[in-house]
Length: 102
Length: 168
Image (cartoon, rainbow over all chains, first blue to last red; front, side, top):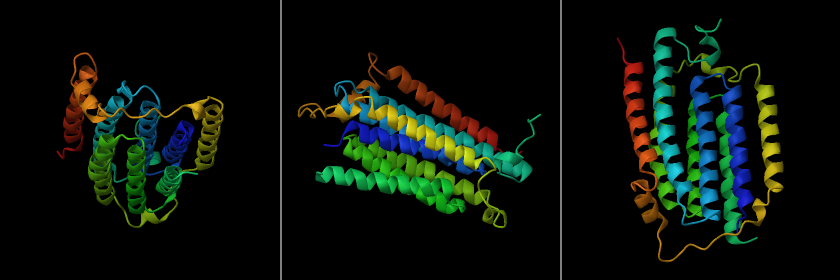
C-alpha cells in the first residue's frame, strides 16, 4: 500500500519546483509553465485526499475538475497577453515588461 | 516493497526529474516537451489513485490543449539569437532557497502530521466514482454552481483571450 504521505510529499516537491520556476525564470511563458506545475501539484493533493478520505464525498475530484477549467482559462489569457506584449514591445522577458513600474 | 509502491516511486522520480528540467532547461521548446512528460506522470499518478476520469482529462486538456498552446506561443515569440543565453534572472539563488525551504517545511509538517497512518479505504464494488462525480457535478444539492461558474469563467477567458490578442 502506498502511504498518503508519499503522494503529499511528491506533490510538495512538484509545487516547490513550480515555485522555483515562477520566481527564477526570465521568460514569461516559462513562468506560466511553473504555474502549471503548481496547479498539477494541487490536483494531486485534492485527488489523494479524496482517495484516502471518505470515498462517498467526491469533493476532491469535483474541485480537481474545476482546477482544470481554471488552469485552461489562465493559460488562454496568459498566452494571449504574452503574444500581445511580444507584438507591441518585441520581448517576452518579464524584467523588460516594466511600463507600469515606477 | 510491493509492486505498486515500486511503480509509484518510478512514476514520482520520472515526473520530478522532468519537472526539474522544465524549470532549468535553457531551451524553451525542450522545456515544453519536458512539461508534457511531467503532465503524463501526473496522469499516471491519477490512475494509481483510481481517478481514471481525471487521468483522461489530464491527457486531453493539459497535454492536448495547454501544452500544445504553450508550444505554439513559444514558436510565435521565439528569437533564436536571444534564446541561447541564461534563462534565469538575478534572484534565482533566492528562488531556489525559497523552493527548498518550502519543500523541507512541508515535508517536516507532513511527516509529523500522521498522514502516513491514513488507511486506504477499499473502493465499493457497487458505486462507480465516475458516475458519482458526473451526478454530483450537475446536482443542485452538490456542485452545480461551482461547475457552472467554471463554465462561465472559461467563456469569459476565451472572449478575453481573443480580445487581448486581437490585432488592430
